[in-house]
Structure formats: structure tokens, C-alpha cells
Length: 264
Image (cartoon, rainbow, N blue to C red):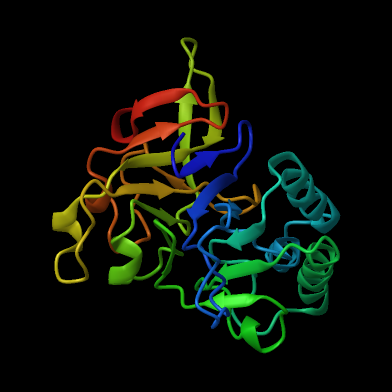
């Protein structure tokens, strides 16, 4: 089994952080040498309170905050993870969040705390000054490495440390494909993108570890916009994509391998 494995049927993965996996707030020298590997539930682009932003744009939607929270807590039960890592954009508002959005995040973090599960946020471009009021560990969005797994949101170049791991996990893109059937019908599917990280694409920004895999996470929130990876004229948001994932392939949530994402 790999260090980062998607949860079947879900926009989430479990990362095995190894004995070196530590909380960014831990100043005590890391986990004990005989500790079992830490397992983290990893989700990207939660975008709490997105319904409020959509209503401001004229789209009327009831809040799905309870549904998002219970889905995440159910994933914790299914995976028995030791920690939750939010891979950026826990918030929707780029500035100060409104009351409903802030309340959604606070209740979610309280429920995690009730279970004794710590949370880490790799700060995204939407997360503003969340570290000033939210009760969780917050790292810079350029990334952190926990054990052999690097985490970065994806809106900026990852740190050299994050690039040096065996796997680099990023969000930000909300990748999706548009699939057509034989009679011209089509459907939209959020997807995972996975492949070898291309060292040339990161030249001048850090040295990619030998054999480092790059994993682009789908958005946990299905209401947010998408990057259509197989539609002509679409552009990626991350400065290192698509060049950083030259041989990347797309996978559906059920594990179906669609092949090279450019030609799906």
C-alpha cells in the first residue's frame, strides 16, 4: 500500500506519515521512536460557507454545513485516522468570514476535539487570518513535510522540504473531467490526478526527491468551481501545473483509471 491512498468512493485520502509525523506545533522532538505510524485523513478545499457566497451571486441554496461535517466525521470513523489534515481552503471567504461560515468551522473543530482528533490546516489562498481565531494547527500554504509526505495547498510554489518527500499532496485545482457517452450525453466527475513529479517544472524552486509522486486532490466540497482537465482551453491554477505532472493520470473516486488526464 502506498503512503497516500484514496478512500474508496470519497474525495479524501489516508496518508501514512510514519514515525517522523509530528504536529507543526510540536516542539518536543517528534513522536517516540517506537510509536506506530501516524495516519492522517486528508481532504482538500472544504470551503465552509460556500452557500453564503453563492447566494451573494444570486444562487439560492440551503446550507449544507451539517452534511459536510457529518461526512467528514463519518470518514474519520471509517478510516480510524489519528489526525485530520485540511489541504488548504478550509474557509470560503478570502477575508473575514461571515457568522455562518465561522460557526461552521468552529463547530467542526469542536466535534474533532471531542473525539480527541487534532487538526492541521495547510493554509490556502482563501484562509485569510484563520490562525487568529480557529483552534487548529496552521502551517504556511507553501507546505510542510510530515514523515515522507509533503503537503501544500497549490496556489504557490511548494517548499523544498515538501518537494523532497516520497509524495507531494496538493489541492487548489478542484480537478474534474467531462465524460461523454456514445449518444452525445455527458456527465461531470471530480477526479484524482496522480503521477511522477517532473523535476524540470520545479527548477529554481526546490529539488524534487527521486521518484516523488504528485497527487492533486479533488475538492471535498462539490459546490465549488472546477478545473476541467480534459477540456480544450482550460488552464490550471497552480504555477507548477500542468508541467509538474507531465505524465499524470486521472482516477475516478471508485478507483477507475481513466488514463492520461489530457486525453480522457
